[in-house]
Amino acid sequence: MLRIGIDVGGTHTDAALLDGDRLLASTKAATSANVVTGITDAFDAVLADGGVTADAVECVMIGTTQFTNAVIERRELAPVAAIRIGLPSGKGLPPFTDWPGDIAQAIGGMSFMVAGGYLYDGELLAPLDEGAIDEAVAQIAQSPLRNIAIASAFSPLNAGPEEFVAEKVRAAIPDASISCSHTIGGLGLLERENAAILNASLLPFAGRVVASFEDALVQRGLTCPLYISQNDGTLMDAGFVRQFPALTFASGPTNSLRGAWKLTGLEDAIVVDIGGTTSDIGVLQSGFPRESYNIVDIGGVRTNFRMPDILAIGVGGGSVISPDGSQIGPHSVGHRLTSEGLIFGGTQLTLTDIAAASGALKLGDPTRVGDLPREVVKQAQETMHSMLNRAIDSMRPGGRKLPVILVGGGAGLVQNTLDAATEVIIPENSGTANAIGAAIAQIGGEAEQMLSYHQTPREEALAKVTALAEQAAVAAGGDPASLKVTDVSETPVPYMDEGAMRLRVKVVGALASKEGAAK
Image 1: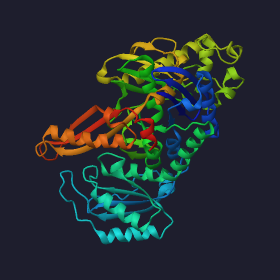
Image 2 (image 1 turned 30 degrees about the horizontal axis):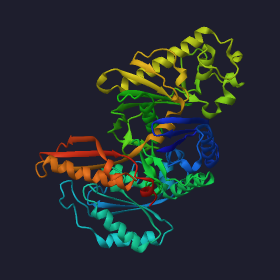
Image 3 (image 1 turned 180 degrees about the vertical axis):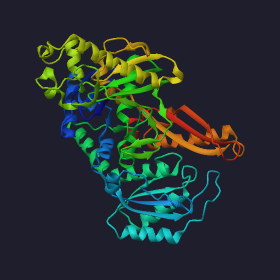
Image 4 (image 1 turned 45 degrees about the vertical axis):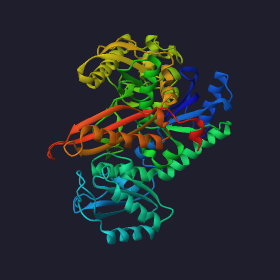
């Protein structure tokens, strides 16, 4: 399959053209203020370098930080009406509890709590209070709010209450955009509700972003399907992203890890993606990013999205160096490196200047750092390697050393071996690993249930949850015949009935055919 992978970052837009497993062309350019222009320029570059016409491309995969940045920067967020089904439980912790004040003000439109829902074992928590539900829906209908998040206790196990309320909303508010928590987050009501609220707040913006991506394809005569990277290393089709934009959070580091796997063939390794401001460190397990099992903070809001286990530290090409070289960051000139770094005529001493002074990088005007004391250059390099070693040590699975793969535009900053690694690898085309990772991504699906192996035998439970994961993968654009289980997580649940288990299954497969994807 001839495919183009693009990663739209805050500083750079990277692109890669692949023919099956073969890389034909790649490019790295500054991200434009107009995202469409940056993408179309990337198309032009890789199509020209690869000697390929637009009509030969079978699919385009785009990774983007647009939605993550929107939450972090508190922009493009729509106000949300939140309906929680779970009374009498949780009365003291209403929706938007413990949110930072600025984002709560940007998103927090209205919230309602009504009785209903189920327990983890399928027993009824409380009957649905239809009167309270009707009243909540009526109040929302009379307001300007049209983005609605619905969350119910243990809805990943029984989504009935959320679906019932969603139907009520659709009947009363035909133009409503609805996010049901069971389709987005995992077990844990408050974090799952937060995830649904964030997703609902991004729905109008998602429509505009996806439309801009589609416009970029049209402008270059590309008629193939469009896919967007999500945060577990797999893909969603454009229609799916319009419903679930929050599932793209952290897709950038994930693409870099998958790209590192593609460039080296290493199934198990630690990947360090060195950018302009930070280094993102993750772990490859069987060729896919290790997932985090902790609560994930998105812009100060606690959520339980499935997310890669990533450690970010303040080591990047634009990181500002102290005069004696003993401190790196946390401040960075970021995308202003080419105007503020010493070798580019600026006044800030950065890690890129240190690399240029040592002869490791051939950039800018090295005479501008020719008078840097050798001890400062040496100290800055030692500080950088020490910071990377400590971070890698903290991410090692089971404390064992693994190969370390360096990718990203700043991979060349590391010149010495790293004590925390068995070996250090900087593969060819490491600078565009994120775009390559996007281009090779597959379709995935995940499902999670809490159940008792005493009531449901393990094999039967595994088959049930696997079927749900496969349904999610097919809905995202996967080929049903290609799906395979890549991860099974079984966690005993304390303080509940004996045999209670939290079971999570992930499946991955190939994209559906071009004809099927277009339907």
